[in-house]
Image (cartoon, rainbow, N blue to C red; front, side):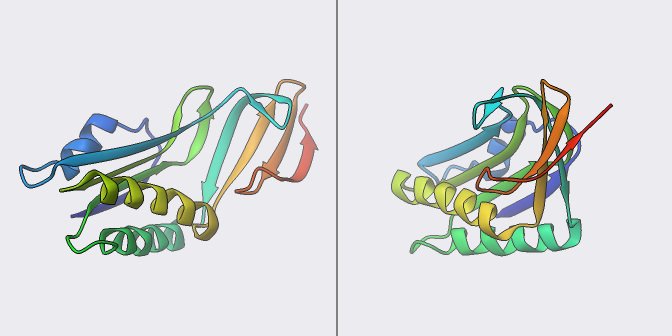
Length: 149
């Protein structure tokens, strides 16, 4: 079972867990990425995510498939990533992986987030307390800055 989606509403982690749960599994691993209040020492007030949606969904499906096949028994994988404006504490990405054994579930979850950061065309623009905004790459490096207002 694989589920991927780009969403504009809050992510429901309980629903995602339900997508991968079954009586055949013994482990469910979850990762939630949330909007934090500081990046590289700068106070953050929110984040805006945008994507090349068709390509992003295609790449998320590929990554989920790869994670699913990393062990002798396929994992179930559910991934959702928010787009649009998010506030502090909002969940920006949720990854849930289930498998009969914990090591494979944990490995699958880590594999997905690491590959997502490198391969999926999703961009974020941080909003700062001083009124500026900056596009930031997936490694946290500022790409461009702009003053708003």
